[in-house]
Image 1 (cartoon, helix red, strand yellow):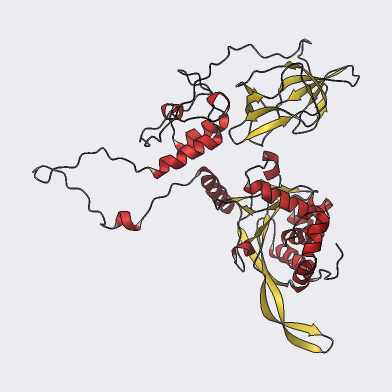
Image 2: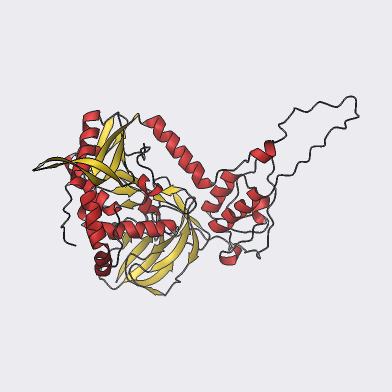
Length: 456
């Protein structure tokens, strides 16, 4: 029998710990490889942890509501395989080592802690925001013992929600736990309530009344103050940081998309019947980008101080609009290893799960180049902001019919063609005009040379 340690997985570059929300398996239960064992929460996302192997859970090292450092073992799984030493397995990283015991040879066991009592769920009405700065919410409320995950505590801190206010929110999680959805719904209700004013107005007859500043009589009717939601704040911070980090330059080309449009119109029904997927323009764009990156690999880099880090893999991020209007950038890993069918499946799957808020943390990290399709909004071109720490981002515009000059063996002719603008924003610290312009032109060349008789 071999014993495998289930490791607390790494959920992001800046995340150092996670909290165990719920064990879905108990000691003595058998699990299959990739079967979910427990639910965890970090200050950014809630997630499920699968088993890296098939076997039996012989020991659970941490109870529910316990916060555990990334990389620490949280359970022992016994497998049928023969082994002379215990191994460590991380479902996030997929790596194993032979360090399963402490220096004195004893099994690593956390200190026992008393169970935390759980409160009954109570219904809360939104409380008007106060001007006092709340103290940081503890992991477990002192009075009720109610548990709050790192994600909920982080949102409460950013939104200025005190512990007293948080205690009034009805939780839909296990044992009345407040989930991310609960606190975001509460914030939405709170924003819709008018903020009461408690400052008394001076009497008009009082001789020593302090005059009040004049206000526009139509101010409340013509203006509305809208509080940024959490994601919008993060996007704003990311965009400002990108512009402050990278000197942006944007180049433009126009490409003839007629062959691609005619091919897609001809094969889209057959393609869906054969592969069960709708073929859009996005995977075709990504295919051209990947080929151009192979021709100009220095566009697939990042900058670390005065060092250029060249990536020998191609991870394409695709900006996806969410129902609330925000954007998220899921990443197609090793896009250069996928054919058009594989790219189509990856694009459709990531876009569908992005809109349903079902992406995993690792699926929005690690991109080396980003594509954004502003044409979906009816825009003919754009000047996108670089997705740090990448050095370039490509925007594709709307495809429109236009008169264009077509060279034929009989001379130049004016014909109606399907044309599209492409714009590339790049970091001028490491990408000069020759590299940026040449790469962009090569993407357009690959699109224009698309075989309209290409089989599916």
